[in-house]
Image (cartoon, rainbow, N blue to C red; front, side, top):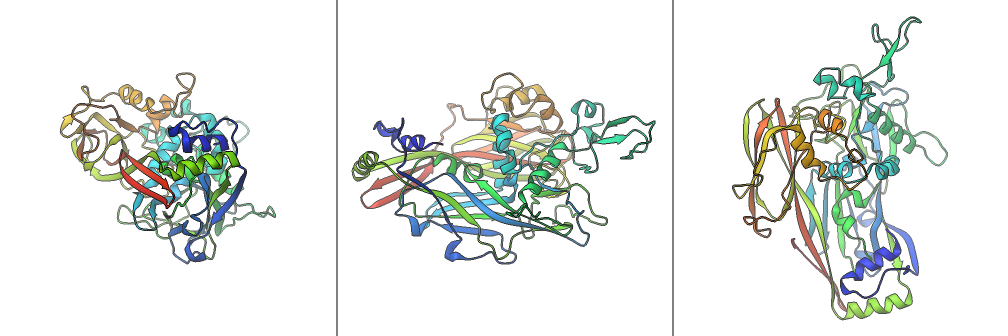
Length: 496
């Protein structure tokens, strides 16, 4: 986002002629440390930053990011010399919860399970060229086997679950699976070699290099700094694409570390004897932590407007100017241990307000928790709902149930960004069928029985294709109204 775009966005609702070639007079990178200048303590999982001391500055959050040192330590069995380890889909898997409040206590954002919603939006709402450009920064890659055409000849277990993270080679010999074939043995593709996992692993290893080009990894630990743009963490940050002052807020983030219930990493070569528990908890061959003794930072930009723009800004502020943003907020509900072919009619929420989309992810028992299972937090494999529909206030939303894969694919495609060509979106049909069978109910269109400002009961019906858990992600829309005047800034948050 450029200077002109940010300035225009602040005053666009007043038609005051901002934008065009306007630029800030000054635009300096700045940061806040943890509250009180604290450092990370052993076992800590929550970080908190405050803007109270800088509230009189004009600042911009849109191009900001967090910088958080992460350490992964091996368990009883060491890693290999160059660890075969990677985050699930992206660095966004590290963050479980975001809470943003005014210092006075008013809450703008309070969302848990955010690694699911943020990874969904990263995967589905960006075009492939953009994702390629930011892949190294976010340690992002889709999970994919070496060659889908070969995978298509395998059983469902092999085809749809590229979780056997074979780090030895993408090429195997036909006989015996040996990595080094005899001279008369033809080579074939190893369908369980997860190209996406290995790309993320390489991104992580590259990010461990410090200023002296010394690798930050060994057979016992991996250390790197997770630099994550705020706009990908939560939609509130993305919508704050304008300069603001007196932003007297605190930002709190909880990470999937220090005895996590959800593992943000997966590994390629499971150490001998390493066992993971089922839904009761996680026993992992490694430990993830916020690096003890460090000072994670939240970066932003402090800005100064040109003289002409500042005069206009002051006049608007003194006259009692307000700015409204709308942003998405998500709630997650898990339903466990569903039997194959069993008809389901599940109440998802009883108090949904201005809900726009409901996402459904099917996963094998506790798979979203286990680090050696699905490499991505949003990979489903062949699992999903058949004959599916959604009810709002006990009224069926779609006249026809979404039963076939083609129907569900078309519903998902509607959420993709507009790109050229039928197969130019973030997912192909083959990827949808084989690994990312994500069901999306888009309920954003206005209907007579929906009152956006009133609480609604949302139910989902259908039948599951195999024994599984279901994870529902309900996307609601909130509005925040920022009122500027000579006395400062006030905020009101409500349903859109």
